[in-house]
Length: 400
Image (tube, rainbow, N blue to C red; front, side):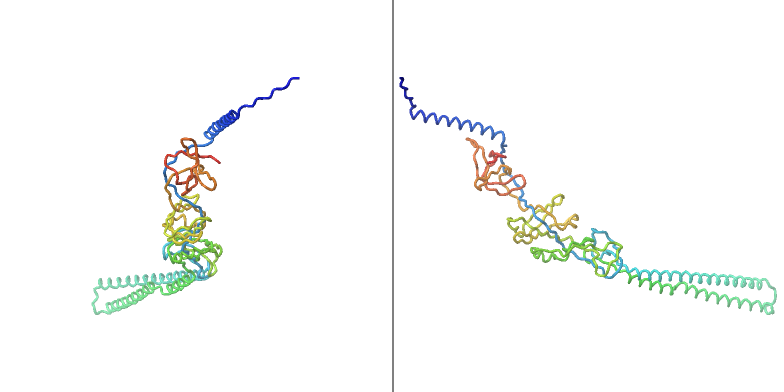
């Protein structure tokens, strides 16, 4: 029977060497595969110094001095300016018309015209009669003078005396007709009866028409949203508190019946325009005196404003200028550029967080390594950080 030979074990040193050698090979393989994967999936960017604008989104409520216009009497509303039209102080915006009084005034005016027409017809007929009578008198006077001129009868004869008497009578009649014609001309010129009726008609029309005069410069609007009267530019700090609209209301349309005291429109004073801005949670209050830019998404409006007051998540700003397109805007979402920051610009996708510490992966002589940074400002695509130098090569798109 054969006795098996015992297996010979390798010395311990050789065993350790073989284990370390295998580990090195495995690490190299992982490094080669990792480097290849890193190279294929991660973009490299060389950073440089730059400036970005620090932005935040908020809800803006635009506030102005707004004066509501009420109908001073019952009647039909007849506007003379269109909604959105700019008006100066004293502009005749429209009229409230009392149809019943206007009808009476129209009837009285027509009566005055009819009476004037009948009166003038009578006076013209009378003047024509006087002109005809004067023409006949002049014709008879001419005939008498001609006969006396051509007659050879003695001056003291009965015939001459009769012709002279006839001439004196004709001259007297001529004087009477001329005086009557002059009196008629004065009557025609005065038109007292017509003027009195016309004055009464005008007075009635004035009572029936009440003009609405713009008490201040601004834009005329025909709809209300309930914020009218809640804001006074001189008391702008009051806007730090919540403003609750009273309720929307539509003004009386053109040609509609308006009862006394109902709303017919409002005047919006565009300058100055304030903005009540509600900031997102966690944002530090904007300091009074700080200049910001307001951009309304979907528009080309870029408004410069100054912070007038702030408290917690509310800021009250005054616009440097209010364009016409803003006159009908009350509440909207806005983007606020509140400061610009200079530093090293990195893409937002390059930022990695390890144990709540922000950083990026930088390329070094021995490969990629995590570098902590401080984020100074962030916009939609990039960030300004400290802790890097211009020219550093970082990884973008790496996820750990």
